[in-house]
Length: 326
Length: 118
Image (cartoon, chains in turn red, purple):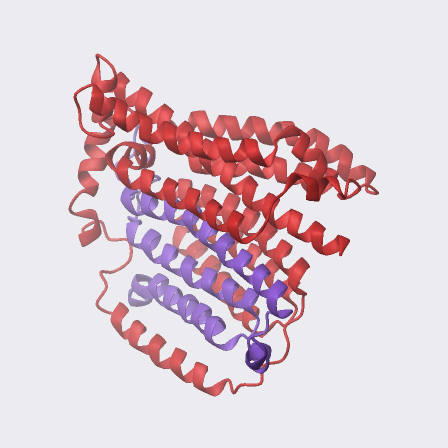
């Protein structure tokens, strides 16, 4: 049964990707890409990667789609017909693809328990992490504790992406104030529904944040979901209204605070006599030390991801509003 | 039949990767190129997650009565990669917005005509 679902969903994914090649309407391309992301999230669930599916659904289908729609609102929605021949790209792709397909024949067969990937560190994570870290969700244990240094690096990459976007696109509060009538004022139904849904989204984000140790979830997903609540508010009620709740300057401080909180936990554990990000030294009992450490760094990740995603959206949205005024 | 089932996931991954690659090198619109890059990227995610799957295993969350878990390590790597992916996509899209402001177009074949004007 699992295999059948896998076969069908992957075929649908391939068809969606194939369709994107031929479409000239960029709005349709972005929508199909959103469908593509949702389908991949379903496949991830079928392949037991629940945390990954969660992230893909929130990020790929949510934030990416909004940002791409924002971009085509500025750049226009149709692609001009190409002048170059399609023959050479097709030839390159077919040859590369054939070489890669030939390469897959050397891969270990799908799903066997004795494949090389499952041999080295993975058994240690699966068998020891519930005892060493004390959390049922092994993905959170590996993400926040065993590979904590790596996750710190990823958080810094996300943070520097915000710096990149903000230095490319200007984001000033008074640009939004010039245009207080933005948002979808005419749609009464949307406004009522948004007001009911937004608190629930934020509540769900908090649940995902603090329940990530026990079930699927964690800082990355929670940050994106919380940002989605404010993005919905901005889309329906306008940018100048959402600035009254969380301003762009406050978000910058939040993003820095999240990264510093994460790094601070590492430095503190060094001060307590351990290595950088060694949570065993945070409390008398190593297990509760691990607990404190993971909760704190997940909070740091959540705050940074929330602030970065929302700032990036603000930058795009204020760009659109400036384009509308001119 | 088992030969197909053993390699089907990898073949779809290669197909998706090549679809993304084709869009990147053949599309002239920059936004569509970014969509192509994202498809390419998702195919890599799919490869990692497919490798982590164990037949008959469950999601790597400790439950009673589960004999076999899928490999949690690829999940961790891909989870962070997705978030970093959207951050880099945002940088790419904001570059596109700036290109539109400077050149008035995001079509690759139209820049070539404008090159003299710089």
